[in-house]
Length: 193
Image (cartoon, rainbow, N blue to C red; front, side, top):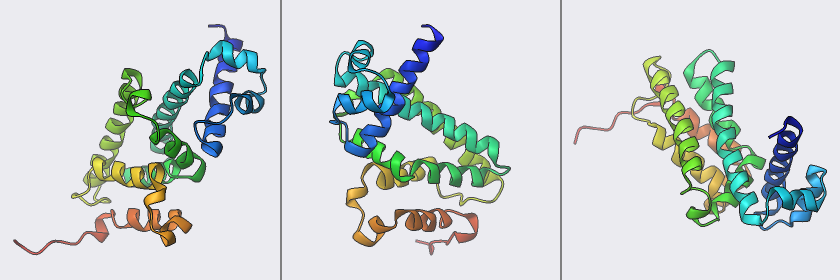
């Protein structure tokens, strides 16, 4: 693919991600074309139907997660800061809205696809490595695993409608409180059985 064609494609997918975050996956294709600055014909040449565009947005989303994790790791000195920065980034309102829109789709549309599964596995493995490093550094509780972080992200990004009203009103505050509870200094020990 030529460089200009690749840029056009990337621009369309990024615009679609924004529009779908704002208006859901059923957003008009015309709105996507307008946001991307291309004609509707160009959009349909690249993506013959909505499903093809949704698949591209899902792939874009999961690859962006891996890139953000790389960036958080490069930008910070310690593993705990990278974990915290990544989780906070992933739960930002626009990104969370896109995750919510994508989570409403049947799994076979995006999640069950091999490319999506590979990319997701990559960032989950990266996050697992960071969790292990943070625990080895003594900054993160040893009883918290990567699955706990993924469940936390799932609640705050994919299912915000299930949050109680005060939490939904200020999700960032509650996310920070939960992350603070994952620090090694916050660990409490359960009494012996």
